[in-house]
Length: 343
Image 1 (cartoon, rainbow, N blue to C red):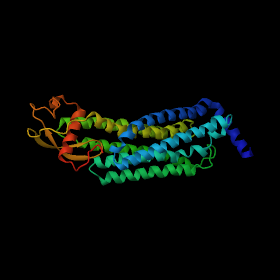
Image 2: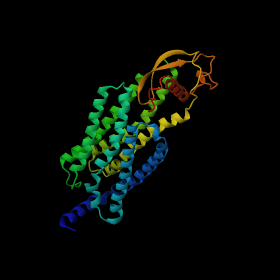
Image 3: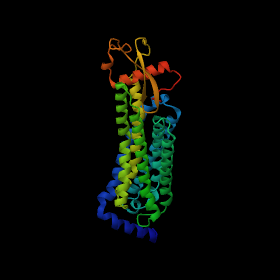
Image 4: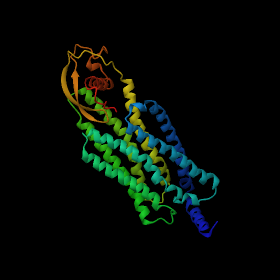
């Protein structure tokens, strides 16, 4: 071991031996949580893969890239901490070096960027293909990717004792921009869904459900990125930072797969007959969005004495799910050339 390496080991031992629980416990828990989330992702993938044929090509590509990156990230995490806890057992220098930790700037982006692009496309469609929403979102996503890669580049060969101000600034700005991007995407999606409300109570109930789903799928990742930013601002040497860096992208991935799987689940559970008598129906235009686009539909409101599509129930007896999918089926039968808003 060279003199510099011996000095680094002595400095690392002096610093970390005073807080072994945090310094060594946080990376160990990071491996455990990363593996747990990867197991959740694999379960979600087994549900999504058979149904992937129903998604459009760019959605399959984005989910595929993020899934492969998640697997690579887990393999990298296991390899890194196998070296730290097994092959270099008794050495502290591995825990203060950025030779491995710095790579999470790029590995995170391989997952985060496809997820953000997925939600950007949804936001763009829901807001009537607004170029303003698209331009702002694309700029913020580009900044997030650039800063993640810059963190990897500027951290090469550095330790917690030799960090530069440039690296510290990038490490703080990166989660800040990532958080801002996700807040923008979430807000624009919620605004687009809220603006799609109509006089149809059935459509509004479905929209309310979609708003709740959007919050549930995007809020956890936003909070994790915000916590990472706050931890770095408060203590840029905190041993909790590696834990957040490892877990952060997996939370994004779980949210993405939850969203795409839910659309397929709704489609499967809400299958309804496609043949019905439309003569006693009155027509009324209604705006509705099912998470990917906002279109003007020709919705038919049944009379009180007519069963809805052979289900033996009146409109008031339909669940939100059935009502929304009934509208979707009606639209598909009348506008067969247009793609379902689930796609």
